[in-house]
Image (cartoon, rainbow, N blue to C red):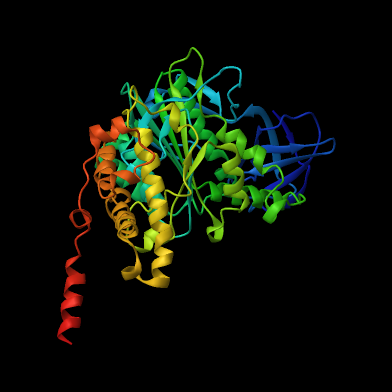
Length: 475
């Protein structure tokens, strides 16, 4: 390793080093401050200057500090022993467990799966959440993001998916990566995994809010390197959960500002689409290889704006979206998944008689159509009142209420099988007249449908609501 004292500038988390010999993009760098050493990575190189991002922050670095270019890239030691362990965002164990002896070390930068080698995503993954399994099905090898908002319970949903998810074959693992979270949230994640026993099949990578922004850019690559090893060398079906990708993009914007780059939309760097694609496109299946990598990235939309560059670009790259609704959250419905703007583009590949059940697609379509009509009618009720509505409209209004209270709402710990979800869907559809089931074949209606009077399927009032009515009558 050659040593240089040619630092020309320090800006935010970056140092600029006058170029002395050819260096590689992504090469590891050691900075010697005398009293301590810091590590960094080559972010950019030109004819005259090398830009180095420092993992531990640039405080204490002076122009006289010594810089060493190691000629190596960031590598992660991988083995099946990574499961059941907790790591920092840079892949260092933080759970006081035994030392991991790696089978090999892999470059964390990886690469997207070659399109020619890709196999089509297939096979159903059961998350235990009705709105996902029943109406926006997750399929092995898919990229299905969750769009959330500030204050919405996306962390709880991430934990629920990690706990409950399973696929055919049973050789299933979860790699969980959290970026920019608080220490309290990190403890909540670890505690939940330990108490539910899910930690045994999970590898956890945690980047905290007070960790350097540079580390946040490495964390998802550590996660995906682990997932790729478990999937394609240990032949496991791996579910990758990344939260919160907005924090990752904010770190990307911070680095771009320090490099004095010309900003793109909303101040984010112009190459953010390419950068996100380098993460998302590492999910999938490979022909003639066992194992799969499925991604569920979670992101918060600033100001609940789905046109913000982070959800906007994510939507272009991925295969659908799960959207959390603030109105549902205000009603206390958990998980507050608003099915109307949701979509799973690969749903048809993972459902049907051989995968889930013959009636899956038809039930999903009918539930969606009926709930959409019920939601529309709510706007009309505010104008003319419920008394002026027809019996048919009243049935759809009751359906929408019951759909939210019974189908969407299931709490943090209820784990529904796909049969439970579809049976519940038929139970709700029995509130509608048979003539309104226009999305379902007659054969399926004969097999599964039993019409009920509207009164039989109406949610009972909560005790506190009954008490309020009693007090009002007395007054």
